[in-house]
Length: 164
Ligand code: ROI
Image 1 (cartoon, rainbow, N blue to C red):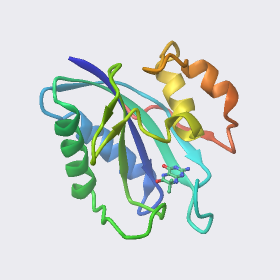
Image 2 (image 1 turned 135 degrees about the vertical axis):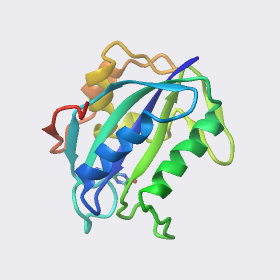
Image 3 (image 1 turned 90 degrees about the vertical axis):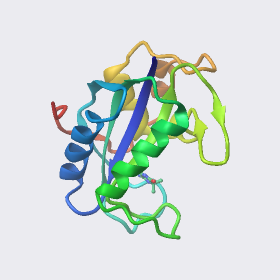
């Protein structure tokens, strides 16, 4: 059994509703259990600025699925919630589910890099992660606490309490 963290993000089609539905969907992952869920946060877009603000959160999932099995299940949830993969990189999206951490493992293949490549720079990942796992350390030994001290909040705000 591995302790994993999933990053959730949306900025189209009722983003707050998208995240709530995704969290419900995470409770139905096979051979897994949903742990803690962060508050829902409002964040400024990273990347192109001509897109709506995002709603972001982080969820803890305990699973015996392999990293790629978990990724498959997350992409299935994205598709069920109307995600259409566009060519445009860093554009707006109805729902993004990122596998941020898979236990203490480092994993790299064509489909997946764990820890997620953007984790250490993204305030909308670090602060929700700190909320639900304040003592967390990354596989490389860096602490979530130390990373939050290095990364500005950039307008990150709590919009709503954890939806469960
Ligand atoms: N910006 C914010 N604030 N939140 C996201 O979830 C997010 N996701 C993305 C890009 C386009 C990089 N920007 C984001 O994929």
